[in-house]
Image 1 (cartoon, rainbow, N blue to C red):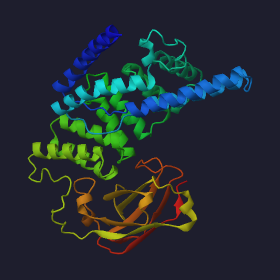
Image 2 (cartoon, rainbow, N blue to C red; image 1 turned 90 degrees about the vertical axis):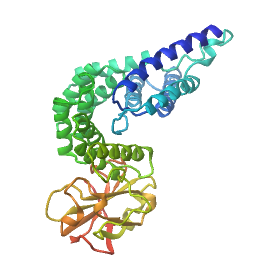
Image 3 (cartoon, rainbow, N blue to C red; image 1 turned 180 degrees about the vertical axis):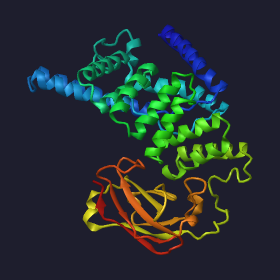
Image 4 (tube, helix red, strand yellow; image 1 turned 60 degrees about the vertical axis):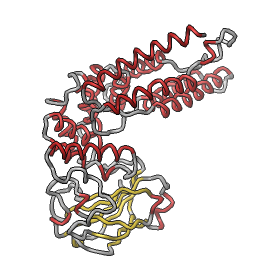
Length: 410
């Protein structure tokens, strides 16, 4: 057992060396999700064990068992290979220190959670973990998905899932090929284009210049509020030393994430860094402080409530976006506020400090429309089944505006 732990420690040290070298040498950003992925694997493992038991007991037919197993494998790939959170990439020895601490801790926790701690005990029953899902099994699931797509090549969702799976496994060239096939079949999927750009950059030395940047700009044309595309747009501008543009992209992310979240803090830090490098005297003011002076324009204030006929369709954790658009002008939101359905009715205030882009201030448009939308997926782009409502055109300094959420997005 001592030999096992010694070998494990040596391998962990080698892995840390490989991880920390790029963190200390260049800019890089990746989100974490070890705990959630481990939990999902454990849940799917139990479901597969129950399905196999039903087959053995004759409760399900072999054909039905095969279909159910294929569906479980697809769901597992979606959970395990879900895209990472979109947070602007930035460097720092703090990140290296965090990885240095987190990797061994998370590895140990994950090992005891879904691994086989008893395997080092010679008295352990070797069949106890027969149903554990290994990396090899996940690879086999990915291969089966690829095989199904060869038989059904028009499945855009399948190609997207395959691209995410390959990216999660570090097989970026194959991810690019899968994303390219998905993009042909779903050319207006902003999230797909952002994932495609990220994978393509990984095959080009993590450079977003050139074709990846074109994909990012296309994604933002389709959905100006796509978080990953905004994060990558800021990163490519930062790498080009266009710090003002980088700060502008990242500033647009702030209204789209919970204000007290770790993502919001990281984004504010990056906005401040970009502004500092751009020579902006307001650097450090990306997030208004308690003592900050109010904007010169009073902005719009009002209340959002939901109609009684739709109240039973709400869940407290659903995301609510409240935003202002010009009544006559560009469709891009001028100011955005994010809350949860549990906060309804919501008293809102929108002003110039929430501008989504330079030159897009609320005060620059005399008449605006206030829209409120409840999103179950927490994405800024409207999805079928979302609930929404809008005001009539009002003055950009109107007070007491009432927005009623009374319609379902078709």
